[in-house]
Image (tube, rainbow, N blue to C red; front, side):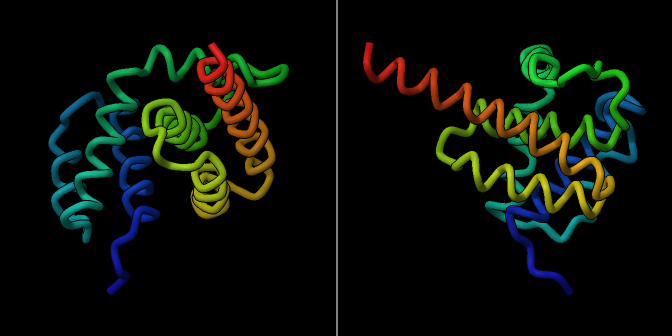
Length: 144
């Protein structure tokens, strides 16, 4: 039995955000997937918070993703890559206690596992650009 980690919490968040896009919010399968996961305690709470934060801020998250897709439209991404970018960007924007490099590394590993090796380049590029913007805004705020 695998040990629950933040990595597994992010995978569960990916699965739920993906299913919400396909089937709508709170469909019967969503609660079953969440309840049957091996996540407990802080990992289940983290996953749930990541899902809700992503979903509640979807417009801002999607605008941020689109801003850094070079010569691509977000609608052309695979649904899985789109869901992964959504949870990763949401985590970068709304969970400032987690370092961006950790989020990027996790996203690349999940991308290899759930999308494919080729998509990791795009995933890395978008997330690296978002991270850079967040650092610039953060340093501007500290100076101001």
